[in-house]
Length: 444
Image (cartoon, rainbow, N blue to C red; front, top):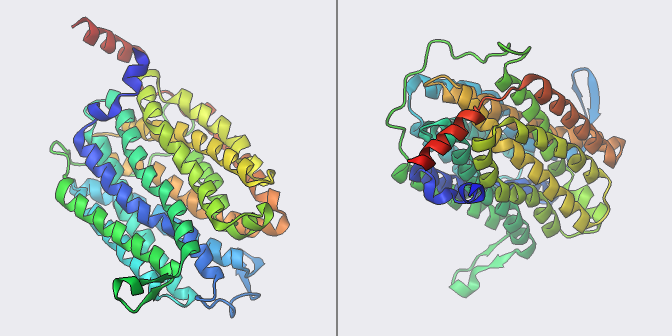
């Protein structure tokens, strides 16, 4: 009986959530191409980076030699930094206006347009500019989207399930993107002569075109089928991020936001090291695409059951389990030496992330005051984006000290995150009342 309730989510889910999730799936498919394509693009002869390599830059008084991994890490991280640091402002603004759809449309428009323009970028500064535009686009889209999913839930007993379904569809697109991108780049160039067109498209350009088309399909779906919640409330006067907690030193959402930064770093350590990993494991780029996507795809398969389960059994048990698994799943990525074992470890990391994603968003939704979903949930989306931004920079810098070092540092951060959840995050979902409600429904 319990299993049937956990694994029958689609029929019971608000159709508006499914439409929004489908739209995000199409957009994420195209956008995730860039995680695999941009490192290969920078390493190719198309982008001129020779003048930058070997120079020295100073950050916080520390001199660093510019290397190819550092350039890759910077352009990947820039997206996350602008995305995460802007989200509190865009989330607060969407709360103030009480409208989510315009923010989603504007964000997707920026993401898609920049994706298409990568095909014309031949200088490193062009990649930086386009990635910055995409970071701002994501900042407009993400808080408004998760706020809308939260507002579609009529009660706490639906919130985890809604986020589980939404994340499942979104992550399917994000997970398939790198696999398709790796294959697209490897299979290029493409001669269109068989269509009667005298044109040859490189594997890179083909990937950028797919990302562009995917974003604009998403734009159309959102415009036609996604609408603001009819009962959306106006936000209160105080929309500041709460740091201190009532029952603990830190507010549970803020503490979970800090833990989510660590989780994002652990996931993103992998992206910058694509070329080193391919050499270390003696594998083709398509293997890297599969390994990168394994985290997302494993996450996909667990989102719906975990989301439903946390509605019934509470948020905290899944959060604790997720961070416990994250520690070895991160550390072992610096130890394994074959493509298959790396794939297995990345799958384990995906499972750990699934145990955190939906329950953390549901917990924040439980706490959010009426009309303030954008501001409250942006703490988590900002934290995750900030971690994703830091991860490539951390690994791009630490790889000079040894391949294992980056992943050992990530595992240490995961252990600190686990401690934060244990001590600062309390249960927000009343399991006993939920069980009583289920029993009452059965009696009727």
